[in-house]
Length: 223
Figure 1 (cartoon, rainbow, N blue to C red):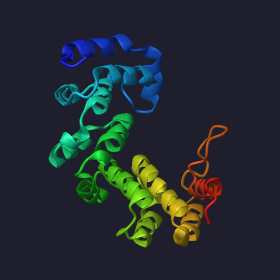
Figure 2 (cartoon, rainbow, N blue to C red; figure 1 turned 180 degrees about the vertical axis):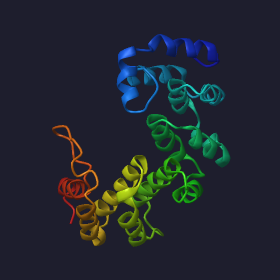
Figure 3 (tube, helix red, strand yellow; figure 1 turned 30 degrees about the horizontal axis):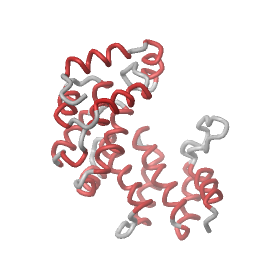
Figure 4 (cartoon, rainbow, N blue to C red; figure 1 turned 90 degrees about the vertical axis):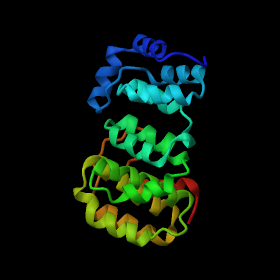
């Protein structure tokens, strides 16, 4: 479907709109009513189209932006473009897809991680923490893991929700992947009690860091 116009794609997205899905998404802060499986199917048909992706993003429509993140070429964006896009991405799903599907694949990921990590905007800072968690898991060399735990210990309890989730994920990842920091990570989680009472569906792992760490270590069979 190369060469498809923005008008045609927006019409397809409008046809996929489901009021029931929108009602559920709105409760989570997302402003679209498109089934994500159908959105992914549309993206698969469109294939990679960087120009179309940029036009979709510019619509400021959540469904269009999610589609843009699926059909874009992550390495084509300049650092400044990604910084602007992150600050424009004010709904959770768009924010998370931008970080996970685009920024993590960008050659500018490390520069942006450092720039965003201590940003005064907690939503932007949460992206810095998400990129840091990625490094904790895949490329921990050069990271000050003890220093990260210090920040979590002093700031996570009172952090805004999105930032708190990102910090908690980093805490858990350190505990899961780095045995020398595991006892401290579990202790911090137990003392702060962040997400301790978060409702967890049967078969899912609790986001409460001590439980999360212990369960993942058990599954991996690591010491």
